[in-house]
Length: 408
Image (cartoon, rainbow, N blue to C red; front, side, top):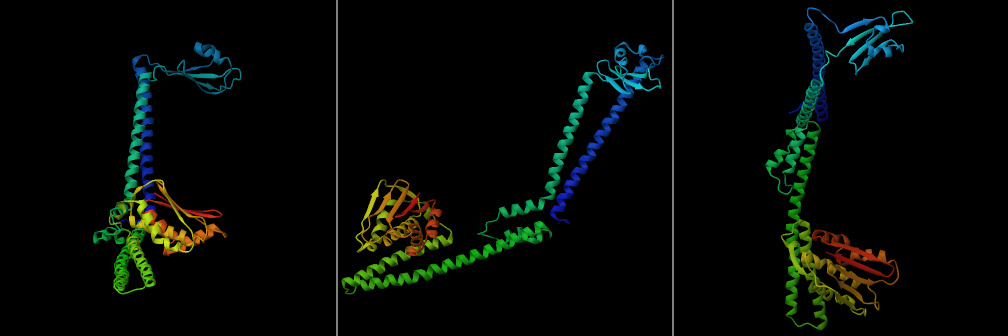
């Protein structure tokens, strides 16, 4: 358990990381300064010991310009201001001192030629310092990752627990992994509690959905079966031609109803049972839809032009394709007025086009209205059928025509 909230733990972790790095850098710079001091003093002592018993010093004072080293006399004649100067080429450091005489200044010259490190030593020092800086950088990077991981460990644990859960098959172990009581009362605990409640709602919804589809499957199919049995009994009796037409209509409607029930139940369960991998021909289903809906053109004197530019074979749910095509064909037949140009149905390699004519009115509005309410299937259902199978559906209307396009 953690005593602090997530944002406090992150802030504390960041502060600790910065503090540790600051202390490390401070010790490193302090060590570099002390090393430089010791090195200068050691070199100075070495120079003095080399000249023993005559003790010499690298510091010399001059009160006249003529007494300065030859390399500095030209510079000193320019009457430089009081201050410190460095001459790299001569390896000299010069201090100009105010002696109270406006005509001349005093000079203190420090010869560092014998105590400065050689170029090879400078490169070694640079290498050592660079290595130290790089090591501290890597240490800080690793420390930052370690501290942040420790601070965010509850979030990572919760994310892994959620990633391994299947919402449709929640077990007791899954509930234990996302139990909000395992986390403290902070942001992570609130998130765990919310996820736990969401999974509970999903589980309850799935249970209700399964119960509904199982019940609906039985309750919806029962009346369809009763109607089918009654029609078979009626066909065995003596019927007039008019009665037979009525029975045919009832049989056709019952057949369509049974197929739609199967499709709706399949969509409600969100499962395919392998039906979405079927391979089927487009042309037979289109011809069947035209024949099933042709009675809607009785008395209208409107023909149907069915052009087969290709004979495509596609993958998907054959019944879903049949219902979508039946809906589009029925809309076209139902809302085409008498005496208009033939309804054009065009089958291409990758799309199906159904074109019918409107006379007067707002074609776009009329097309949308009829497609939304025709045959009990609106554009939303057709669109969903297409999405589940990887197809696409669109409806285009101009001033006189409506074109339904089903692509795969």
